[in-house]
Image (cartoon, rainbow over all chains, first blue to last red):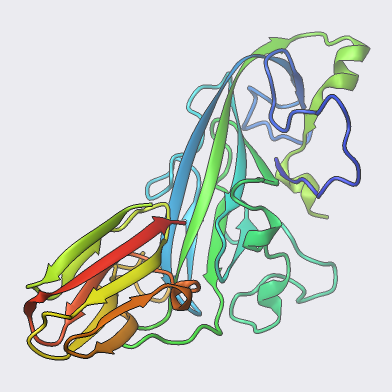
Length: 215
Length: 112
């Protein structure tokens, strides 16, 4: 449900669309929990799509962070669908700045960590703050490379947005950074395919559950 | 690229309000103090309220100074190259040490 699209080694022609399009197939793996019965292990065809751009911004002091909750919970940014037949494919890009973003789902559980004990993101550490962190240049605002997949009632995805140190303090105020996120919410209306053919299964975009990203 | 030209009869004078999804990048500041009554001490100020963060649950308004320049009487100064790395996070304001309606400041900028 979270994917990083690396820079392409080669281009193909005709180009392959970054976002899901009408008629595309998606398949949710069996790892999705029983608490999300509307998608667990199911295959769908995208009936129609609608791309909705949206920007978020936060001004944060250096050395401090804000947890940005993308879910529809109180205090969240309300980027999750409310309909069980809707999938939100969200492309995320960043405007330039001196900040890092760590992904957590649900709150407090890192998406990116290494296997050695203690090798987990930690914004309080001068070194571990860079572990698993996305920097603005990793997913530019105009060439978004981070893709997230949200369905109704998915646990909250948290973007821990940390403004790095090292900026000169201005006269009359502490150093701050404006962190600007560009979102493209690709609303996909889904039609379930009860018995997908082998060809449909092969062509389907597989959407893993977040637990499959951690082992 | 928006621009505005205002007399420094009030301080601070707002040249651009905050744009939530962009920083403001000034590209030109011209200070015409040819008819000014005294030397003009001009300051470019950024005004914003930070977001609620882990360390600051109730943030206060911040007004950091981004640029300060002293322009003599009978002088006109134009700044362009020196602004290339300057960013305004919130509202762009300009202050003058002594109010003077004959000191004219022109600013051009673009959202980034």
